[in-house]
Length: 261
Image 1: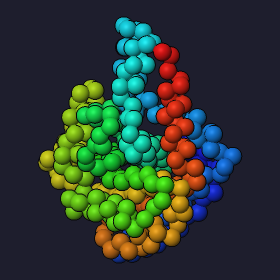
Image 2: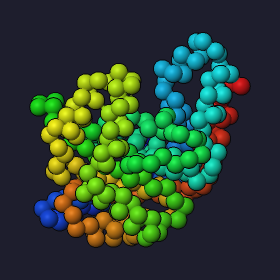
Image 3: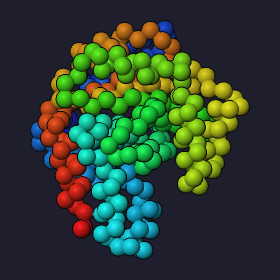
Image 4: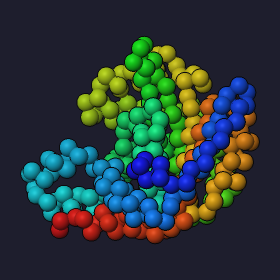
């Protein structure tokens, strides 16, 4: 997906406050790249709901129709939930393709109900230093709106600032437990030690606000970033897709059309 973003109109600027450099980036999808973005998302959306190894297991034992039904049962029907999920999926993809952070858990796979929003941080990224195995965290909020407004940005700010700006203990605990479930014990143990023994410090954390919107995020989102007075490095990304509503609808229709039922 990053290839599409790289072809789009990108503006970036930085500001320094409290000796910390904060980054604002605005990306506007070119009309000619809309279909390409839909196609890329149709490919990656299913793996956010079902792990590939689970798909392979069901396919081997029960066949294509069972795989299709499994995905149908996991795919949200509510428009608001679909929009939020697309925002989270695009954010995850952006983080992994354009930063040093890894998003180790696709948390939508563990949602209680397909038409219910999940609690906790939208996305938590981690970076393990290859030199000393120290851990850094990226706490990210993903927002998806046809029209961006100050209330949405204020809510995002509150969510990022919760727990003194650190990853919420229950959210990080959820990731650790899921990593153990899927056999990623080494990473789980590093995160568990950071959380329960070493303690997570402010200088180990960065924040990201990623907004997918049809409106122009430049002014409101830039102003919201400039108003931040804390001591955690901030990245704010506004991804403008003028056909936002159509994007969400087209992606989920494409996913369902691709099922072999």
